Every structure is written in structure tokens, then in C-alpha cells.
Image (cartoon, rainbow, N blue to C red; front, top):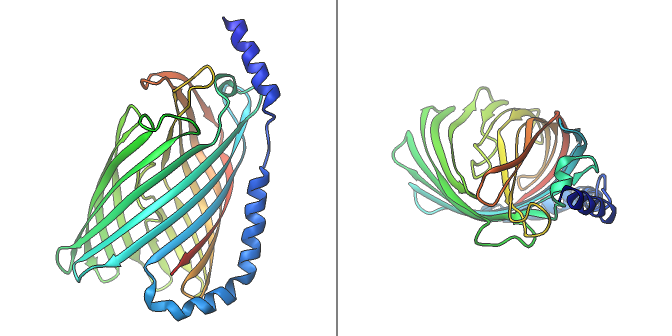
Length: 324
């Protein structure tokens, strides 16, 4: 039986050559560069719609460089993230928002990696819908509820077995005009497991230029993280931050580990430089590393099949955001 598996693995390696930085990633970087060159004119035109800024659209391309696995071999990842959100002030005390996202994670394992022998990964992706409801209790207190649901799986995975759903509840208190503090908890059903995490809410304008805040909305992949940013002027900003992230995907019925679950956990830390073009166009360039990284495959019932850790994984990321 082991000999048969080895033969299958060799055939998968021969028929699926391992790419390095994908052509798609290079095309996105080139297209983004061309967009950036035209941003000043776009931003000038968008200023005409200053009073209608209820939507935010963003696209990110992330390359995680080759990283050694403890059990041998290495891997890299290209990630493409797309976000569209709508937020509206309904009344003096009530805000509501809706967001959709699509993420594509393209993993590439070397021929000597154990994970490559278990599964040839194809298009790990997530497509999700979430809402954000904020209620201002009084001048100092606010309550936020963020439920969400998403498909998280490999291309061809069963839809019903690939759903992740749950939500976050948080409360914040305005300690002073420059400081909001709070806490929350997230609970999610994530492919044969129930996960929960605490979350710190902070928005602290330490000075006119220096700010400590949460860079993300918390969700199924983890809490909101922390970031310290410094505004050089109205157009440029630098920042340093960190977060915790956990991704889970249902795999399809092909290969040895059919209908199983693939998980990646890591602590990303980064530096960021941001350029704003008017009030509606923003470009972020991030560079950093994924620390304490771990990969795992579980069977269809959530029991571990294989686990491996990886060294610090450097990454670069480019994000273009448009508010309108």
C-alpha cells in the first residue's frame, strides 16, 4: 500500500511542476503599479463625491517567500484578497454595515515536503459575507456585533462541509476624547471545531501624529491585532504591527487525504508605509514575516493526520483601497 502511495506521489510531482512567484502575482503587481501612476487624476475626480463615501473597495497581493519545513522541504504562498464594504450612519446612535470578501491562497510545496505527498493543493479559497452593527449606548459606551458566514475550501470541496460561521461581540468605552478602550470575544464554528478568542479594542491618539489601534476587524481567522502608526504628513504614514491568524480549508475528494481539512496558524508581524491620494485612494506597502508558523492536515472528522512547523516566513504585500 505504501508503495502505491509513493507512486501516486511521484506522479503528482511530475504532473504538477512547482512554481515560484506565480505569473498572476507579477501581473497584479504590474497592474497595481500602472493604477498608482494614474491615481492622482482618479483621486481628483473622486473628490467631487466626497459626501457619498459609504463604500470601500480594496485589493491585496501578498507573496510569502520560500520557507523551510521542520520535517523537510519548503513551501511558498501567493495570496490575493478582495474586500467590498458598505457602512451607513442610520441614526445618531445606530450604524450598520455589510461586507463581502474573496480570498485565494495558492500554496506551492517542494517535492520533498510531506504535505505534497498527502495532497496536491488546488485553489484554496474563501468567499464570505458579514455584517457590522454598532450601537452607541451613550456618549461614552458603544456596542458592536459582527456576525459572518463564509465558504472556506479547496476548489471542488463540498459546500455544506466547508462553511464557517459565527460572530464577534465587543464593547468599547471612551476614556477620554483621544482614547477608546474595550474588549470582545469571537466564537466560530470552523470545520469540525469550535474556536473562540478574546479581543482587545483600542483606538488611542497618543499625539496628533502617533496612534495605537486595531488594524483589522476581528473574524474567523482571528482577533483584530495591534498597530502603532505615525503620520508623517497628510499623505504619508508609517506603522508597525502584529496579529494572530488561523486559516482552515475543507479539501476536495481527490488524492490520499480526501475531504480532509488543511490548517495554517501563524503570527504575522509587519512594517507598513502608506500613501494617500486625496481622501479616497490609499496605497499600502507591507513587509514582514509570519512567525511561529504551523501547518496541519486533519481527516474529515477533525482528527490530526499530519503536522509540521515552519521557519520565519518573510512576506511582502501591496494593497490598493478606494473609498467612494
